[in-house]
Each structure stands twice: as C-alpha cells, then as structure tokens.
Amino acid sequence: MTTKNTGKIEPELLSGLLDQELDPQNKKKIQTYLEQNPDAREQYKKLQIFSQQMRELNSIPVQPPEMKPFWKELKSRINLEESGLSQPEPAVSSTELLKIITESRKQPTMAQKIVGSFVPAFTGAIVALAVVYFFALSTGILDKNQTIVNQTPDSKLNQAKNSKDSSKNILVKTKQPDNKNLKKVSNPLLDKKFNKKTLPQPDQNIEKIINKDDSCVIERMDTEDDVITTVFKVKDKDGSMITVIWIPFKNASPSI
Amino acid sequence: MKSIVISILTFLLATLIIVPNARGDNKVKCTTYSILAKEEKGTYSKSLKKFKHIFKKMPFKIYKSFKLLNKNKLALSNREKVAKIGSNLKLSIKLLDRILSSDNKTRYRIKLRILKKKENKKKYSTIYSMVMKLSGDKPMFLAGPQKGGGTLVIGLICQ
Image 1 (cartoon, rainbow over the protein chains, first blue to last red):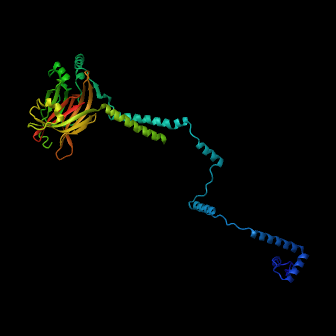
Image 2: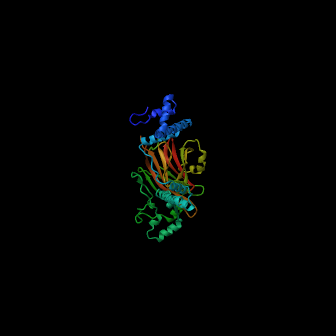
Image 3: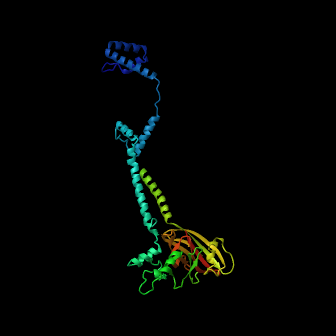
C-alpha cells in the first residue's frame, strides 16, 4: 500500500479513494493514514481541488473555433513565402500616412491650376502656332509675294524713261525652262538678253494698246521641237483681244 | 499629361485654321474646256454658246460644230494643278502671280504646260510650256491637236 522505502502512500490509491473505487477495507486504512500524516492529507486535498476544477471545465460547452480567418491568413502567408516576399515593414507610421492622404485630397488652388496646367498649355499653343506658321511659310502657302499691284502702262513708261537701267523696270523676269529639251521661243522684246542697240525699239503706242486691251499677254513659250506657233488675237464684245494659240502638233494625238 | 494633350489639340486646331485659310487667300478659280471642233455641221454644246462670237471669227471660222468633251474646274494656287484633256494629253496650270491693276482689273500670271504621255510608258513629258498674263473673266484658247477628223480646242478662263 505504501512505498517500501519512503513510507509514503502511492498516488494511485489516493486517486482510487477520490474516485471511490477502493474496497471498504483499503478505504478505511487510507483514511486512517491520512489522519496520521498531514503531508499525505495535504496531497489528497490538492488532488480533490484539481479533480473539482476538471469537472467544472468539462461542464463548460466548447465552441468550435472560426476557421475561415485562420485559413485566409495561412493562405496569404503561403503566397507571400512562395513569391519570395516577406511581409513589408511599414515605411511610415499611421499618423504620417493619414497626414499624407489628407494633403493629397486637398483641392489645388486657382493659382496652382494656372501654373500647373494653363501655362504649359499656352506655351505649347504658341510653339504649335509658330511651327504651323513657319511650315506654311516654307511650303509657300503663305507666300505674300503672290499679289503684285501693277502700275499703269503710262507710269511704267515714264519710269522707264527716267531710269538709266530701264530694262529692269519693264522687263519681267523669266524662269529657266523646267525641261532642258524645250527650246525657247520667247518674245525677244521681253527677253532679258535683248540688245537695244542691234534690234529696233518697240513702238510705245502699240505697247500701250496691247497692255490695255489684250486679255492675254504671253511672256514666254517653250516647245519640244522647232515649230512655228501661231498666235491669233480675236476681238471680244467689249473690244478686248482674246488670244488663240495654234500649236502645230506632230500627229500628237491620233487617239486623243 | 493634361497640358500635353491641350497642346496637341491646340496644334491641330491651329493647323486646321491657318492652313486652309492661307491657301484660300491665294486660290483662283479657273475652268478648262476640252472642245472638239469639226468642219462639218453637227452638235453645238449649250455651255459653249458664250464663246459663239469668238468661234465665228478666225481661226475658228472654218469649224461649224463645237462639242464639249470635258469641263474641269480648278482652284489654282502656287502648286501645279493638272486637268486631263485627252487620253494621252494633260494640261498643267500653276498660278505664279496675281496682278492688280489700277483700273480694278485683275490679271493672273500663269504657267501653262501641255503634257503628253510617252508611248508605251506611264510617264508624261512636257511638249509645250508657256508663261502668260491672263485677264480675269477672259478666256484664252489653245488649239491644234487632231482628233477623229476634228481639232481639239482647249479653253481656259479664270475668275
């Protein structure tokens, strides 16, 4: 019943007494022993208290734990580990973060709007206008030299008389032919190379009439071959002269 | 980003406003006529009746019928405009200057070219080129090419 060396009672017998599993003879013996040994009695009391507490615990109904948050957290952790990222450390404190969010939600002032948006847009617009203007100018769209105010024939002639180098004022600059094969058959009176000393001067009165009434003044003609082009002047209803140019095409268009 | 978008839109708007207006200022409206003149009696196109008094005189006196084959309206500018006047001929017109005289008459300095298609080739070459000053609302005629027993007459009038 007791341990041989120490004389102490075995714990199984105490728990058997507590659970009322001992026969009456053993029960009486142990009770006597407990009365005589205060240490054993103290041990038995502790055992009683423990047993009482266990019973109380068993009487409390157990709620099964909520597993969803657990699985969710576990899954996120697994994902983080798989992606090789650990949970980031917060860079700023929550107070600072709140401050940043509040500032970002603030509406910009009118001055800020003007500086931030309209000034660059205005600068861009000016640059755009400049680009378009210079592009148009370079392509000849805005060529202001297109219009020439013509002087009256009389004033032209007077100017020519007064000027030493009169040919510059009367004669019209002609461009070189585009096609080098074309042969020039321009009017010698209007040609820049015209030599005043060797060729007769045009009658100024005839020139006046032509300038006034001729509806079409031909400055220059270039043809592919040596051909004689005939120019007819047909009188219109108002007295002006209509020009008809007769070009001798060399079987040019059998299938026109 | 917003300012870039505004700049691009302004650029496009400026292009749309400036370029057509600038072009419109220098454009001259011209009409070309391709006419087939024949010696025998035949059709006389209604739209050519305004030139009847001219066609009565030399060198058109010998022709009795004038048939309008083609009529092209061109807006002349300092870029060449081309009108087809036959199966192998083209008329190229370019405005060089606009001359305003003291008697309120406008003249147009024009470069006119006749282009002919090369045989068995797609390219056209210049066979005739001229520079002239043409009064506004006054016609000028080019004639000569033969076609189907008749003569091709090309008329040009600018306003």
